[in-house]
Structure formats: C-alpha cells, structure tokens
Length: 319
Image (tube, rainbow, N blue to C red; front, side, top):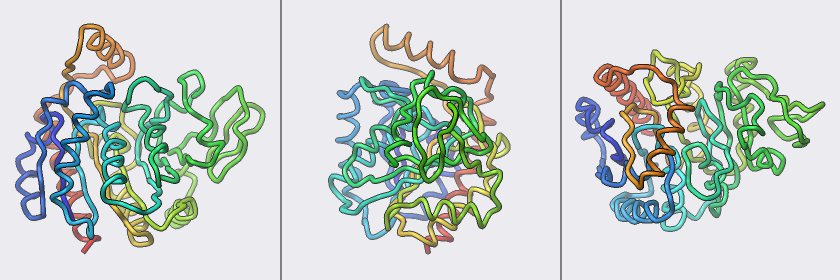
C-alpha cells in the first residue's frame, strides 16, 4: 500500500513510534504546516488552491495500482479530504466512487462561501465520479433538529447521501425529505436505521447494499471512536476500534478499495489569517468543541498507539 503523511499540524510529527513504524511501507511525508493554521477548521479558496498544488506534487510519487492510505492530523482538517479527492479524481482515478464515511458528526452543513470541516460532504459530492457518501456511526447532537444547524438534508432526498447513526432513531424536521435507502420521513420526523439495532452480519449487509459503485474510498474521523481508543479535538462517539476493524474488513473484502484517509489526532488549535478570521474560528471552537483540558503528551501517546494498530490492520488485510 501507499502511505501518505500530510502534516498540517504537529499531531503526527510528535508520534515517533508511529513514524518509525511507517518506515516499513512506501511512505511520503508532506510538510504543509505553514498552511495548516490557515486552512484549519475552515478555509478560503486561495489557501486551498496552494495546498492542492502541494498535494498533487506529492501524489505523483505513488503507484496507484495500490490503495493510498493518508493520515492528516486533527479532525479540524476533515475538509481536506475533499481537496485530496479532487486531486485524485482529476489526475489519477477514472472510476465512479462510493465514499464510506466514519464520523461522530455528519459534516453535511451548508457552508457555501468557505470549505469547512463540518461541510465537506457537500463539496465532495460535487466532484465528478463521486456518486454517493455513506455516513456511519454518528452519535453527536448534530442529529437533533438538523435543519436548525443548516444541514443539507436534500442530499438524503436526492439519494446521494445515506446515514446510519449509532443509536439515534429519529430527528425532528420541518420539511419532508422523502424516503431513501437509510431513512424515512413521516410526521415531521426523519426515521433512521441506527447501527446499534443491527447485529454485525446485518450491518455488513446493510452497508454493502448501500454501496453504489464497484470502487470505494473510506474516510475515518477517529472521533467516531470511544475515548479509550482516541483523543480528538471534538466530542467522541461510541464505536470501539475492534468493531471498526470488523466493519472495515467486510467493506475491503467485498469491494475494490481505492484509498483511505484518517483524521482525528489531537493538536492544540492555532489559527492564522486576518483578525476577523481568527476571532470567528476561536468563537466557533468555543461554541462547538468540548471545553475540557487535554494532556497533549497523553493524547499523543494514545493516538500513536491507535494509528499503529490501524496501519497493522490495513497491512494485514491489504496483502
């Protein structure tokens, strides 16, 4: 497999055991920390264009007969998944793709003027050949009155997005978003199919039935995991690492995997930009992210261990 370390913050660069383990693979590191503080949380197009140029240059070093595994640091950078997919789709892939998205948040917010880590699903679905996104494991409050949080629920209505929450059975809505392969709208509620109600085999079959293409791409925000398995900049979900590996194994064995990206490492947030941009970002973090004190060294050690386990798992299943 190809291993790409996109350094946008200092979370990966401080995981020495993980970096040492990465040397067992065809690995390339891109130091883009000079842009990291500018694109963190959300970004305007000018910074993203500069970052895409750097990513494109790095991608030319890989053999795309093998899946591309990318680590990108904090979940504050999840919108960079859309930029990575844009580069891959433009230069290296010519296949229709279904994205399977593991996350404690749906990342479906309308945010048209900028690319945001909570809105990247919308941008990704505008990329040619990405036909569908399946979001799995959401357990955050984003599913409570989602319209009031500017969720783009029309993606459900047009069939380009399927959502399998962890445990939430319904969300209150004002409009009718029809029925799809993972939801039903009735009496001002969207009824979901939470994965906690499915046994493992039924969940594997459900995800497989939702996949719309021969080729798949997987994106993982480790905030979908329980606190025991990860420390992130966001609130944590309810899936443990072993269960995630079982789901990934079923997907990879039954589909043609093009790549995986992983975010959800912890780093202390720093922001560059003008005064207004900085104030807006810090205000958003104050409102949306949990206000708990994180021990950086302990978080780094925990995430390092989990990243090594992820790589060992992928190496074993992709052989």
